[in-house]
Length: 267
Ligand SMILES: NC(=O)c1ccc[n+]([C@@H]2O[C@H](COP(=O)([O-])OP(=O)(O)OC[C@H]3O[C@@H](n4cnc5c(N)ncnc54)[C@H](OP(=O)(O)O)[C@@H]3O)[C@@H](O)[C@H]2O)c1
Image 1 (cartoon, rainbow, N blue to C red):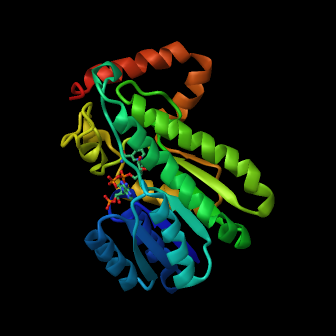
Image 2: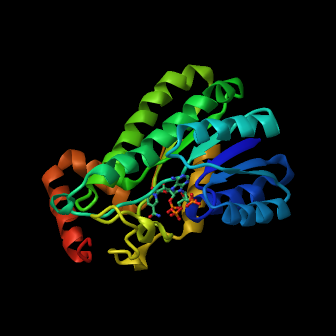
């Protein structure tokens, strides 16, 4: 099985690679993509120790050429693609009326939507040939508009819409599309995310104590992908919120606003 994971240098993507290698061992060929080559090499070494073959590929998902090169490198090394996991992503936290320049909103859309779109376009012929799987790591913020996250929610709603539509288009080719919706997971994503000025925030404005472990999140994604599940909605709050939004949308708005008030003010 040949699996491409973007954002494999850290967090959910790195843990997914390790768990996949643990489960499939020598039956697995992993293509690990991100920008931090040293971190990718370290993840690759762990996966190889578990028996997997690996290819480390530098890829900035903001760059269309690099996205296409990732797919070409995977095919060059392993000859086919069974699974593409579009996991690389960035977060952001800012109140919209405190943002002066929206240029970083466009960058976030490039990272969270356009990168996955470019890679998926390049990989689709190979995934159709293998009757494979496409995975999109969205977010609960791609199901519910979260105050303080206009940019992030917009990119994840876009991702959700793109991959839901694609799912129906490719189903007759035997290709499944699984969309994962994690809640708050214990990674560095909020520390790296954009603040109102479009800089790395350097801190999390959330109470991180209730965060899901990265191991649990990766396990849910791996199981859901192998089972070709449509959606992996994580946390009870996420599952309830999805239905509550249909039944009592203004209640969901109030709960979201209360959560925003509990957070440290975005800076
Ligand atoms: N953690 C959460 O609470 C949470 C919740 C919901 C959804 N998610 C989603 O889960 C995915 C993974 O998040 P995470 O929590 O694991 O974040 P993370 O620990 O910050 O890891 C992000 C990964 O994406 C890569 N990446 C970031 N920008 C990139 C770019 N321009 N080009 C290529 N790779 C890039 C990073 O690698 P390099 O820096 O080396 O490039 C890293 O490997 C994201 O799509 C995120 O939106 C996370």
